[in-house]
Length: 85
Image 1 (cartoon, one colour):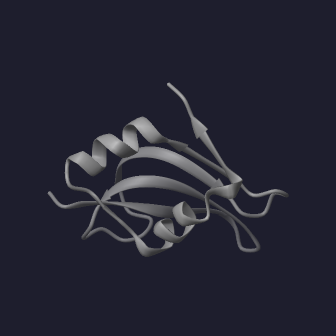
Image 2 (cartoon, rainbow, N blue to C red):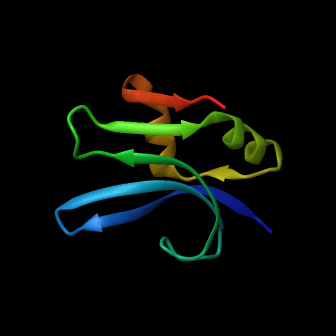
């Protein structure tokens, strides 16, 4: 099964929030996911971006790919808080 790390959109029309999920590449954006590994809220000031780095590293070792949108967020990590544990 080919998996990718992707953003899953939640929230209302003008108030989005996102989960960072591990999902099968062939599924839709908001389809069934394998695991939640983080959260992103662009509406709050400053934007909140949490990520379980241990689980992300695990999935990357297994061959998971990172989506374009998530890759842009990871490059701009100045608002990032990582979950330790």
